Every structure is written in C-alpha cells, then in structure tokens.
Length: 106
Image (cartoon, rainbow, N blue to C red; front, side, top):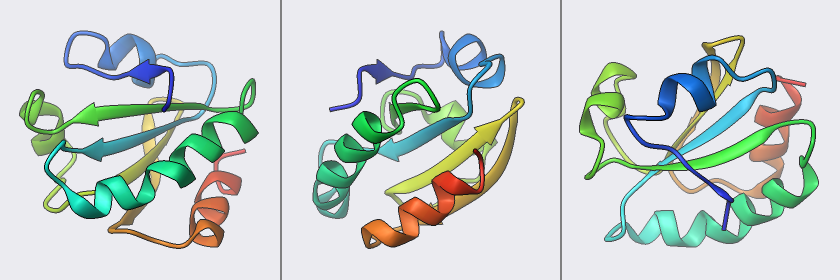
C-alpha cells in the first residue's frame, strides 16, 4: 500500500506543493475496481520511489477534494506536477496504461 495517505488537511502540502510529481488514487473501501488496481498502485509506489510520490485519497472521507477535481467515478488516478493536474485515468486499467501516465509526469 502507498505510504502516503492524502487528506483534505495535507492535500496542499503533499500534492500541490510537492517537489515531485504525485499520483493520487481516488478510491473508497467499498469499491471493487479500486481493490483490483491496488497491486498495480503498490508496484508503482516501489518503482517510482524517489521520482514520484504515490498516495491514496478516500473519496468518502474527503469529498471536497474529489469534487474540486470533478472525480465522478472511482477509481480515478490523477497525476499532479507543479501543483497542476497533468493527466488522469478512470477505472481499472492495465499496468501499461499506468506506466504511460507516470512517464508523462517524469
């Protein structure tokens, strides 16, 4: 599991003001496709250590951030660089799609 839990309280410091690109996984505990993508997110966390941060934001606990970035379905993955969203994936996707998303930020 990613070491970084993103919340409303730390979103600005961990995501918007991060020196590294950040992949944010918008998810919920009850979401089946979210559970399906967990191993890929865990893999990315290891592979990108030191180059990119990977964190999870629970949409049920922090709905204001989800609303701010128009997250309509989960899982949604948004990559932020320099405080701006630069790419996203919606739904369970294969690993190569995540790799493309990550490479776009590096």
